[in-house]
Amino acid sequence: MLPLFLLFVVSDGFASEVSTVQPLILTVSSLSRETVSSVVPVDREVQIHVHEEFDRIALYDSNPQGQTREPIYVVPAEHIETGFIETNVSLGNPEFPQGWSLNSQADGGERAVPGEHCLPVWVAGFRDKKIVYTDCLKIHPTWMQDNKLFIGNLDVRSLLIPGTHNSGCYKRGDKLSLRDTIGRYILTQDQSVWNQLVYGIRYLDFRIGYYPPKENTSITDDHESRFWINHDLIKVRPFASVLGQIKKFIERSTNEVVIMDLHRFPIGFNMREERHTAFVSYLERELKEYAIPFTPSTLTLDKIWTTPGRLIISYGENSIAQTKDWLWPPIKQLWGNKGTVQDLEEFISKIVANDSLQSTDKGLWAAMAQLTPGPLELLFNPKGSLREMAHKVNPNLMRWCQRSHWWRKLRIVPTDFFMETDIVNLAINANVIKGHQDTRYETD
Image 1 (cartoon, rainbow, N blue to C red):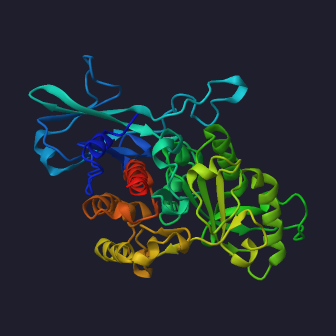
Image 2 (spheres, rainbow, N blue to C red):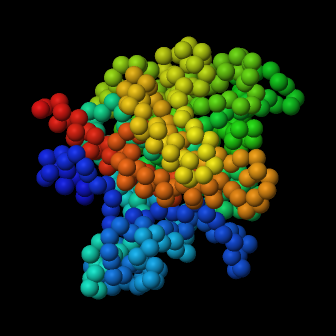
Image 3 (cartoon, rainbow, N blue to C red):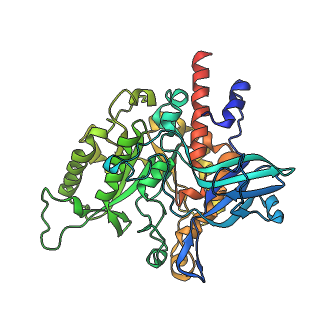
């Protein structure tokens, strides 16, 4: 299905200024809160961004069009004009529809259906007591394939790619636990890697640690359990479990291109080349058949789709990356290390203004859209957390991308608690516009 904005693009002859903003946008808060009725904190509460005037706005658990349904939440009239509403409706951890849950195809179960699909959270905008606009929270498991005709001509280095920062640092279970809330500066996501990919994320950022077994520090063929995903010096979960999710997604989605950035190796690798060798051997055995060979030349999605590869593997140590043709050089992460939203906005605006980054010769790069906690924040703010910091940044990031048209020049945009942004929808729309504009220039 064509995005709504595309009708405007086509009829206006590829107008130079195109709005990708929908009248009502649903996101999911990064915050968690305790309740008096439960020892389990509540998280994933739905947010509504309002970009047009409505008499009434309500949430439903299914499509309200053509049905007489009671809403699950009604926005108070005095809040409609604020432009941003935080509700107490939790998305929870819904089963993905149309075969996109992780274990859907086990034992011959439901096959995955391409396309975007709605979760059971819908928003409706009313005027004169009639519904004039509806939308839902969606998964976008095949957005590259869905838009193949529009974006196939684009170089992979020119795409706007929705990403996550420290992608493997997500909460430990189906529900937020007290243990999770204690790790205020460890967890950066609240969705598994599988879920991230199904929602539409296409850039994954990992830090890898090596932990030798206590009884034997030598490297053997059975070393998978020694590689962990870290948040800097703290190990979070085994890499093997995440790798399995990536492989399964690539196999099920067929035409989605995923970028895996093995960005740093903070524990166990320093001055130990044999451990890099063991890790690369493990990657080669598990992932080489999915890997896209590195090339400095133009590499369009159309060209990728004629090959078996669907995974770009970037290795953070360039000397190691150069030893294998299926490893890509390190991806440059542009960090502002800023502690305030205003300073972060200024930093990203400078990235956007740097025309030299627009050349595909610069390779893959990422504008890191996070605040960085300083020592005082860590020591003296007992209520501070990465969730709080993401909550300050994420709604602003979307406004910056829309208002200043940053989406035209940004490339990979990794976020914390990505569901509090509309980055996937923004990327889909932006890439379709880019693809049409490139086609126009080629035919003029």
